[in-house]
Length: 206
Ligand SMILES: [Zn+2]
Ligand SMILES: [Zn+2]
Image 1: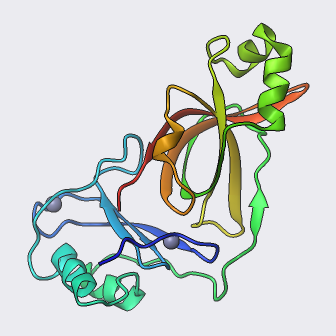
Image 2 (image 1 turned 120 degrees about the vertical axis):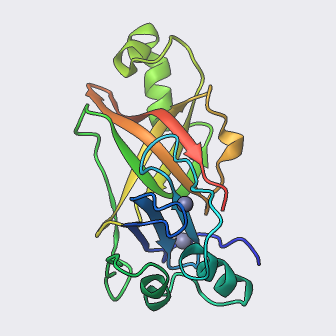
């Protein structure tokens, strides 16, 4: 089966289920309206995928349906595969995108769709112009190269977008538009430097 590519209309469900094989509870199901479904051991960095063979219900059913060409994000299929879990309802139409302003300095996790990856931006230039002070405001090491990513949380309404500066120790090569990423971010809002900063970021192989 081709790997689903996330797109403009993507809406994502995130919900806990019990693994029918190893009985671990919760594991987390991430399902997207483009047809992507992934399961995770934990809802947080480093986002380990739950690797477990399964009986005929549960994950095995999802795999089988996928191999037969069915849309595995169908909520009826998800409800049947994971009885007892609550499959979240989605709005009838994809909600609008809305830019999240970096208002909170507390770090939190964003799971979403990569919408843009660029090597240079006005925000990066603003940091460079300030020199050592700019990097101190970001709390990143002085003159570490930065790049910029925009991630959209496709499970929220509206779908919030986070435009983030990323230190170059995380390689931009692993992130492509239309794929999924998880990031731990915090906001910086100090004079000319107004940005989300990435402290950890992972791409997701689907
Ligand atoms: Zn998608
Ligand atoms: Zn399991």
